[in-house]
Length: 49
Image (tube, rainbow, N blue to C red; front, top):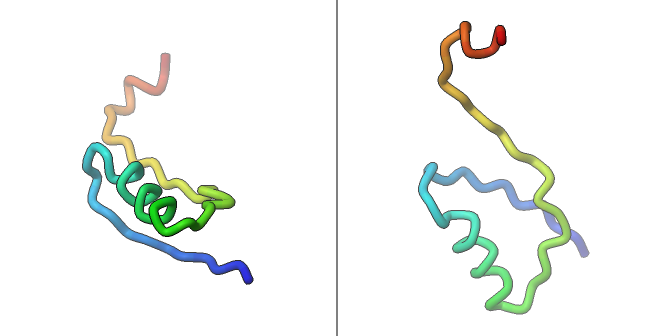
């Protein structure tokens, strides 16, 4: 049976590695890491080039 788990984490280095390590240590395979939200703080002028 497939389960979908949604996790909200802090933006810190190594968080993805820790989470995937928790699953692999227990013998679970992660089938997909499909949802990713990217937030960028940039000036409008940077996107006009």
